[in-house]
Each structure stands twice: as C-alpha cells, then as structure tokens.
Length: 408
Ligand code: HAM
Image 1 (cartoon, protein in one colour):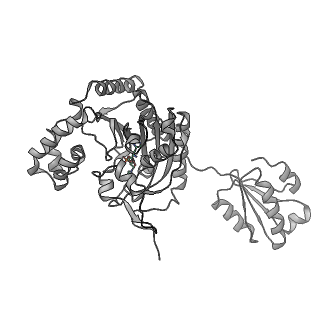
Image 2 (cartoon, helix red, strand yellow):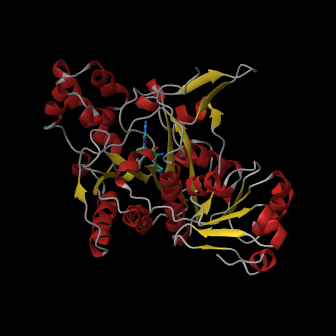
Image 3 (cartoon, helix red, strand yellow):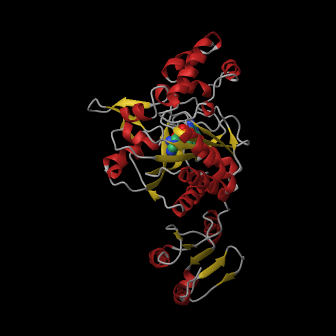
C-alpha cells in the first residue's frame, strides 16, 4: 500500500474545520482591505536563500530543494512571504508607490522532524501589506490576527519585540556576537556557528545550557535608535488603547532573517511544545534586497493545522435533498429532477435502484435534510415519497408541485 509521506497529511475528516478556519480568516482579512494573491508553490531556491536567510534553520536544514529537468535549483516554498514579495516586484507594484494588501493561503513545506503540531507539509493563512511606513499598520496586522483568533474562539497570548533597523541592529549584533564568543565554551555547536553568521538567531536556541547563558545576553531593545524606540513605544500604546493584551519578549527573534522593527508571535498554552500559532512582523528591507524599490512591508502567517485542536467548527446542519429510486425505470427521471433541484438547492442523486431503508441510510450519511424516493406507486400517481430527516415527518406530495414549490 502506498501511504502519504511522513509529516504530510490528507485533509479529510478535518476538512470542515480546515474550511471553517480559512473562510473565517479570509472574511476578517477582507474587512481589513486585503485582497487574494496566489503564488506558485515551486520557486527558484535562491529566492528563499536570499530572503529567509542562510542562517535560518528553514534554509539551512529544512528546504525541499531539487534540480528540475533543466538542472535549475528549485524549492517547494517553506513559507509564503518570499513568493509574495517576488510577485510584487515582478508586477512592478514597487514602482507604483501605493499601499497594497494581500492575503494568501496554501501549503508550505519544511523538512522538519514531524511531531504533534509540526508537519512537513502544512497550511498557512497569511497577509502581507506593502507601502505603509506607519506603525499603525503593524498594529492593524496584529489586530487582524487577534480578530481571526477571536472569531475562531482560539485563546492565545501575544508576545512582541523590536528587532531594530539597519541603523541600530548592526551595533547590537556586534555586542551580541562578542557576548557569544566570550561564552562560547558553554554553547551548542549551532550557536557557536551563529555567533559569526547571525548572532541574533542564537537567542532562539532551544538548548537548555544555551538558554541559561542567554539570561545575561545583551538585548536589542536596549540598543534601539530613537526612531525604532519611538515606533516600539507607539506600537505598545496603540495595542493598549485598543485592548490588545501583550507581553514583551525581548528574546523573540523569529526564525526568518528578513525582519526589522516589529516582531510578534501568538502563542497557545493548550497545544504542547509547538505553541506558536501565528508569527510575523515588519520587513522593510526585503523588497529592496530582492531587487525592487525600497518598500515598507509588514505581515504575518498563522498555521492552520496548529489551531485544529483549539477550534470548534460549527456542526454541519442537515442540508439539501437526497433523491433516489426504488426501481430502474425511474432512474432517468430522478436524474432530470436532480438537475432541476440543483439550480436551487444542494442535491445528492443515487443512480442505483434501492429499497427505501437503504435510501434513508444513504440520505442520513450524506447529512441531507430531505430524503425523496420514487417507486412504482409514486410514478403511477405522479407523486413522490418524502421524509424530512430533521423533523422525521413523511409525506407524499404531487411531484410537479413539490418540484416547483421547492424551498429548503
Ligand atoms: P513562521 O513563524 O515560520 O512565519 O510560520 C508561521 C506559522 O506557521 C507558525 O506560527 C506556525 O503556526 C505555522 N508553522 C510553521 N511551521 C510549521 C510546521 N512545520 N507545521 C505546522 N505549522 C507550522 C512565516 O512563515 C512568515 N512567512 C510569516 C510572515 C508573514 N511574516 C511576515 N509576513
């Protein structure tokens, strides 16, 4: 038997929940003025190397990267931002000087060690906003994520940090790098490497010994330039004024390299160790870095599967009509009736003649509200046998009237 690859799951039983999460997120995003964007799942590998960054685990260890038939190095997208930025530049929107807001949803691929909440193919819903410098946009993006989780009934805590900008981050990185080198004996191999490549990545290390050492590490927020400090203070004031509870996590650095200034994560206390249900922040240098005109940008993405256990999708109500026949002669007729019903109502049609009990069982399995059956008797009288599966009532209306007056 061929099974799905490790860490990759079919969406079957969870399909109603999956659909409910995405529909809710899309509704919220549209209310904030975001429009749909779809970008390819397969991109040139260099796109992710240049944006997500060589020092990240995603690029360093987790990419589904291979040569296509022409020998070009391509990669299944590990995240959505890089592709959206590539499309934004390719469409020359960076030269139009407007504000553009996009939402997307789709499969992402990371070759991680699968465990609860951590898949190799998972789905994100994300938004990216381009062209807005104001920190109010950072706040709006956070409020949007808040609205989505509130609408889904998901409880969370919000952590925020500032990663500074090109003016202040380099000095901080130097300080941190010096700290890492001074403490290198106690650090894991990854962090020793990070000290030179991208020291802030070290703060994300899960190794207990490293974490202990980082208790005394210098923190970015102590090195922010005046503008970054102002923006970070403003962001906190805006969130407080709009009743968004948050805490400062001064070691929050995110797992991707493109961020500056605002970085944030929504965390759930109810799902074990893979507890980040959404993450995002500002990335004002990425458009330029990928060859576009300098463009302010901020966004976030949430993990659809991460919140499965936190969401109670509304129970599917019985809906629509199931129509079947007792004998072969009626099959052609019911197929035509079904075609007409489908113009108005969800309709299931059964092509095999069956006994009444079997039709009722089918209608129940398909969650139909009405089970409609035609046999010899009904045909002779121009009637149809009906059972309302919700109320349990049975009737035998005239077929023409029933079809005409159908209202469910
Ligand atoms: P990220 O933090 O790497 O950010 O991923 C966002 C969310 O995707 C995570 O918070 C988590 O819920 C979910 N996720 C990540 N990896 C997995 C996995 N292996 N299995 C299941 N769920 C997972 C980004 O991807 C950025 N592109 C977000 C962003 C958009 N920043 C700015 N704009």
